[in-house]
Length: 164
Image 1: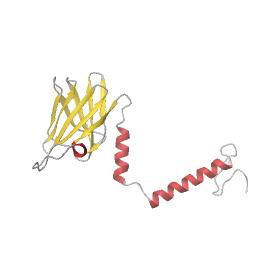
Image 2 (image 1 turned 135 degrees about the vertical axis):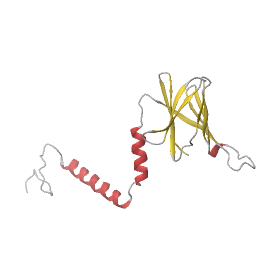
Image 3 (image 1 turned 90 degrees about the vertical axis):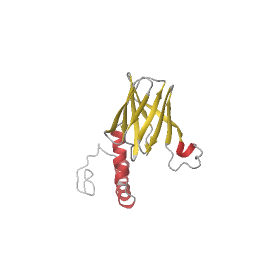
Image 4 (image 1 turned 30 degrees about the vertical axis):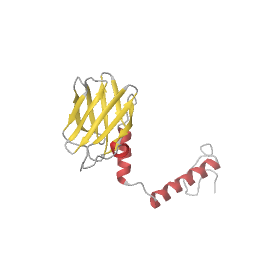
């Protein structure tokens, strides 16, 4: 057998790969195939990952979740279905959001007008507008993973993704 051919009969010029690189590449491919068979990535998780990557905005600042009433609050006695309260922060901007069965209610601080998109995939689920006081409402609560993209003047802020 010639040095320019691999075990599969395909041409492989000597200057393209060293023996170690070729062995590493073949091993990596075998491991990928084994992982795909033995531990495949769930289709829904793959779709969410692709959607999240498609939505990345290099100029956007990410607002981190600093408060979530599901994990940070003491439950109120007698309240059967309390609203979910969320607070996001990036630098001096705060976004407070209340998620209820009726929809989203929130405020951007410091107050001012903003365009807000409720993201649930590659497209916006809803488009909202914050008034001069920074207040906004949406009639349909998100289902599944969601994030908010806010545009205030020339600035773009995207919140962390959460599951509704």
